[in-house]
Image 1 (spheres, rainbow, N blue to C red):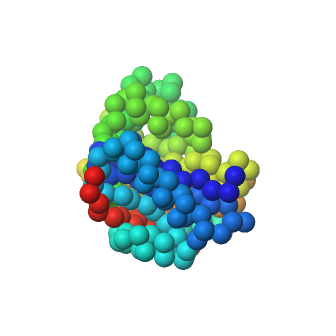
Image 2 (cartoon, rainbow, N blue to C red):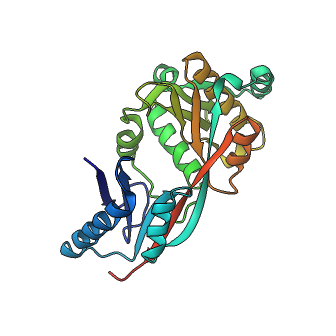
Image 3 (cartoon, helix red, strand yellow):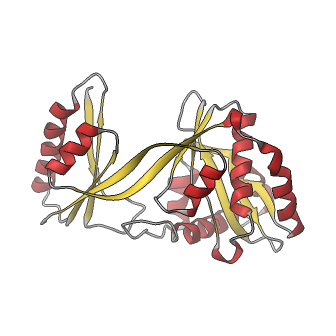
Length: 264
């Protein structure tokens, strides 16, 4: 198998008129030769199925010159940019962690793993779904997000094979309200790389150091399980990008969204 081209509607977004494209090409094969074949096949498929859409969207790393050149040549325009970054966990200085946790404890805020919530919070699944939806709505995006049902949340998050229940942290207020979350995902079979997932805090509890403490807890987990790196990406201008840099994440090539407005 030399390459794969796919098209889909993003189930996590409320944008049926946008068709997302993805191209995965084996490094031993020439990108510039395979991209036109894959792209042409996808356009033919969309035409045969009489798909009604107004926009094509495709992501690419900014240093993938062949992909960027092809997309621009097909009439795509550069859109949102999401800088990537990585942390060498062995280099993380955790000396400030205990102070961060103590400040939260003084306000009655506790950090719990997903596995701990199972036995302590009868309504944990619904509360976690609600928390995630509140946070997601403040994530910068060119497309509106779709609010998932509890069942859909369970399918796309809790049943993800990369989920690690011990690397999924939730912040609870003194009255047991779910107010923040941060997590790592095991997409690397070898376990040497962990991918950072959604980190955020509800609006009523921001500027209290909760997000910082949650991120610190994920890094400490990565250290304890023998992982070498944590990788992530954040929208340009996002407060989370600044927090990651403060914690020692080093910049890597950004991922850029390319879009093309088109007739159905």
